[in-house]
Image (spheres, rainbow, N blue to C red):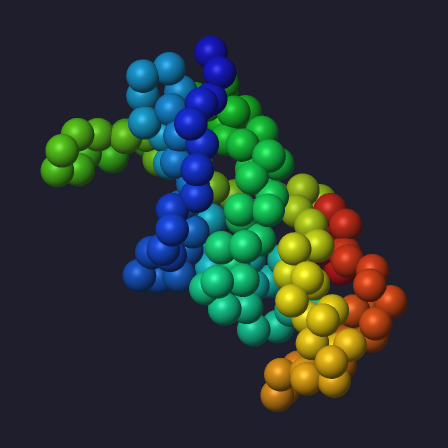
Length: 142
C-alpha cells in the first residue's frame, strides 16, 4: 500500500512540533516532528522560528514521506482516538531523520540580505560564513 496525500500542517502544535499527515490506504496517519529535534538538527541555525521549522519540513517532504511510508509498512504506530474519528500516530525517533534533511531552503532569504548588507541582529557568525560561500548543509546536518 502507498502513502498518499501527504502534507504539512500550516501551523505548529502548541509545543512547537510540526505535524505531517497523509493516508495509508483509507487510514489517516500523522507523523509529528518535535521542535527540539528540528532545532538540534542543524547546529548552525541555533534559533529556528516556527516559520523556518515549517520551511525545513516542507522543503524536505519527500524524505519525510519516505520515512512515513516505512513506518506504515512496519506498523510502527499507535491508534489515537479523537473527536471526529481516529488516526494512527506514527512513532517518531530522532534517528529517523539522520542524514535525511537539507537546510537549503533556509538560505534563500539570507543570501539576498547579505548582498544588501541587511543582516538580522544576532545572526550566527558560522551561518554567515556558510552563506557567503552559499554552501548549504546537505543531508545529515552540520
